[in-house]
Image (cartoon, rainbow, N blue to C red; front, side, top):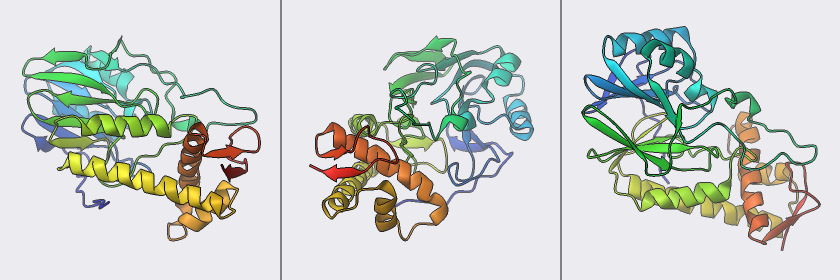
Length: 299
């Protein structure tokens, strides 16, 4: 799978991403946000805003200037990690627009005994949409129609948006060209993530605009490669179990030895998600509840 880290973020500047789409990238670059969070303005005289982004004064002012005196008919949230949703209240107050999303933030499953949620700090539990969108439900403004495409996996409430008639999908953090998505239990679910990838492969969009980084220009081929990559990773994890590795730290040390050690924490969460999936399939078992610190064995 070929990833593409070439991306000119041009922080603080609206960039034409498609005929009726402007991209504004927030200056919140980091290991998990890449060059920053992408906010999209869809439309000409009547706008939809997708993922307002972090509540940074500079990003807010750039958005305010880019919107100008135009009407904003809707604010759409792909998922409720704070780098995507924190600015929504200020933007809704400024524009009077309704807020749309799949629903409020929630983990895929309850916390287990002695377990903590590693992504709690990034979860926006205060977020409440004005309207929760069902899968395939549409919202229209003047010159645009967005279709909700439920894509759980990265979070339980992750939702992509298809721009009808344009062949464009705003893919949030589910599919990005620069990196694979973080899937970290209990916030995320590998089983749901894989199902959502297969779902997107069956759709007809020709161009993805993700929550971080540049566009994905050949999404059918790229999502196929993502599926193959995840399956390959799961086979490798299963093989490590068969060879006697029982702890997630041992598996990470073996499979991610060429990866920056600062990213080993995220790698451990990804391995954990795969192990949960293997346990659910009956191919692995743990010494008690499946936790980050548990010992795992091939079945």
